[in-house]
Length: 332
Image (cartoon, rainbow, N blue to C red; front, side, top):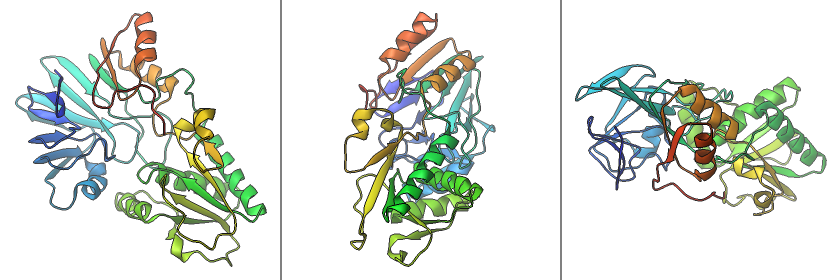
């Protein structure tokens, strides 16, 4: 049902592409991250809750159709529906049904609770195409609440040392999750935080709020005042410079699943790493794949060697689908 082409994953019977890498006549998008949403196609289909973010990525002139989670459309007699993936706001799995057989393309997903997006829906299918970003047995995440408690403790420690806290996180998905998670933990402990964010994060926050996701109040870094009695937190994408030269002391931390490895925590100019990922860890991948009851499992978007071997040893029909994003273990 799925063919790999130079433009990406193609469903010939429906004449549609899933997350194409270049412009095509008809594209179905799993979510609005830049490696899944590319400009240049004539027509796009995305989830209803992902419209605002997709519009931000593609621009006002893009021809975008939306579909609520769970509602089906038919193209050339092929049944197509989108279902929540739990990755970021509006993220979707694509379910394709034809001649009594069902294929699900997961996109990126996670199964842990996240107040900034709809939880994943586990779908039974015949063929399941799964991401494998963190498909190594040593990628096992801590409970998110525990991670946010540790981040808050880091902020408090920095405040006591008269230091500014900078948290590096991707502008779409990760930054909003940090904001929401930290605000919930801080409020439960009666701690006031002043959130400042990079301009690219401000624009994404607006899209979240348009979609009904309430986030704590944030300011641009130019609004910072040294007189504030609250705890200072500046959230910015990786690699961006700190724009205010008046900070006397800065302590920074990177929030990413790649921080699970000590070699990655030692890289870069940041002083600490927190393992906070919007992707499934090893256990989530195995559990989700098993829950689909799929007869055929295709793995992509990462180093698939270990997980393919593990699943095959368990009697599963698992194999690698080597796309543009298949690689050896990535680094942040």
